[in-house]
Length: 55
Image (cartoon, one colour):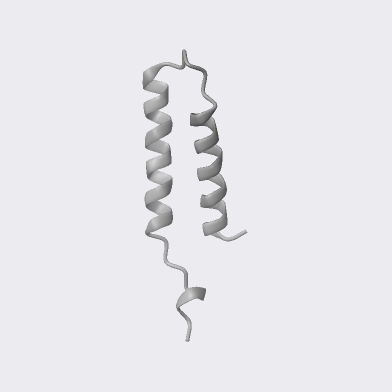
């Protein structure tokens, strides 16, 4: 599995965790999950794929 596929899978997992979180989930936990999602998104957006750039 490529790093891109791993990141996309991790992002889906975190997004589902946030979407399915119970209403009484502590705010600081939700903030940690959001930071994790932001970090994964940032890494994915800045990922350099050698295969895509070959001529």
